[in-house]
Image (cartoon, rainbow, N blue to C red; front, top):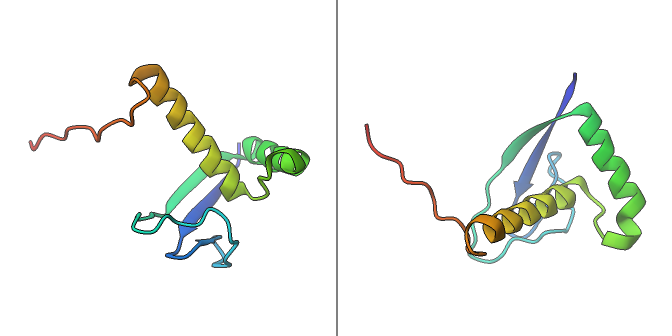
Length: 98
């Protein structure tokens, strides 16, 4: 099974794709730090996402893979926080020095 790798990246004033082009969506919240993540997904899942974006764009307004991935991440976090933490965000896990 082949995989595709995505780089999700933010700059201070906006969102850029891996090629460094400002795509003007998902603007960063002032004062909130952003981080880059590298995401590998199976080829079939990537194709499924691309097709879903293409067919649902008029209904969702989601036009980029980055928007799609961010929305999916936020929605799953919301669901898990609601189901397992009284709708509150989870605190960072405790890390004990060994």
